Every structure is written in structure tokens, then in C-alpha cells.
Image (cartoon, rainbow, N blue to C red; front, side, top):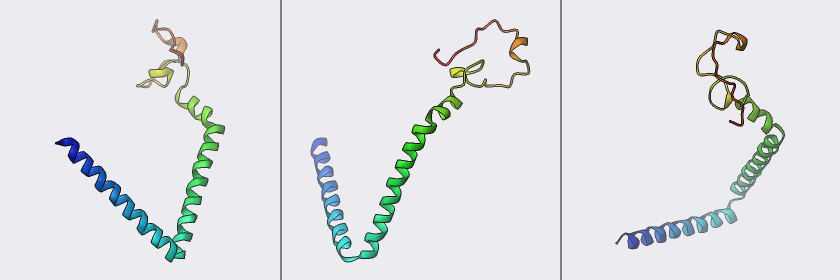
Length: 102
């Protein structure tokens, strides 16, 4: 029973997508303003994704190092959950320092 309902749902969804695509193609052929706006927005999207990719390639390791600092502290060697009033050399803790790889 559920399989028939799922098949009907998928069929209706595909019909909806097909009719939406046909309507889009009709508008595409008849309205130059929408075509121009669509092309501009698509180009803007592609340039933005490319810029994000290039920026991550250049600055990704720097950003990663900001969140995975080594030294004393909380999870992944980052900053502790609460502020410490004692420098590391005055700490009475016998716990060893965590590193990023732990």
C-alpha cells in the first residue's frame, strides 16, 4: 500500500517538475528581461562559489588553525570552558598538555 502511494507521489512530483520546466522554457523564449536577469544571477552565483573555493584554498589552513589551537584547554586543545587566572607555569594541575592530534 505504501509503495503505491510513494510511486504516485513520485509520479506527481515528476509531472510538476516537467510542467515547471515547460513553463520556464516558454518564459525563456518570450521574455528577454527574465533571461538577462537569470544569466546575471547565475554568473554571480558561479563567481561567488569560485571565489569562496579560491579563498578557502588560500586561507583555509589559517582559519582551521584558529579553531584548533594547540596548548592547554578544552576539547581539541582549544580554549578552556572557563577563564583561568593562573598562567601555565603556576598551574597546580598535573595533567599533561593536549595537542591537536589527541
